[in-house]
Length: 171
Image (cartoon, rainbow, N blue to C red; front, side, top):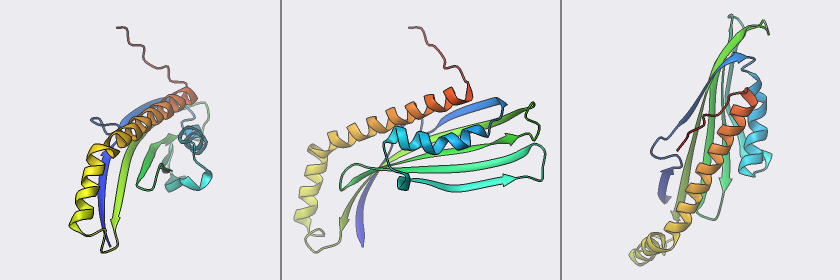
């Protein structure tokens, strides 16, 4: 089945926000991420996925890797996919410092299926192009801005949980 897809990065032009942490118990962020994703993106538990989890208990410090994905649907065409990837080292001694880094990304996907003869016709494609170009473009921009704000809110919540003081920029 043919589908017309528009994909945009919510954080363009950077594409990724990186948080570096060195301190006590970096693994504590793992337990907080699903709750943050549900609360900040305003979705139910079924829309938050733990895509990947790895833990190496044989080494010292213990290495971990995890990836969470959140799906936020807006309308019949557009959906935002946010992703949190974390990797770090957790020492077995709780008094020793560990380290971790967290990557935050987000994409806005807009899909228009072409699953009928009408949807594959040149008239429909012309009307769809005109609609997406004139009216729906502002809607998509608002979705991208909302996605960017939510990812920055997630960054702030993760930094607060880890005890990282945000930078203050004087203008």
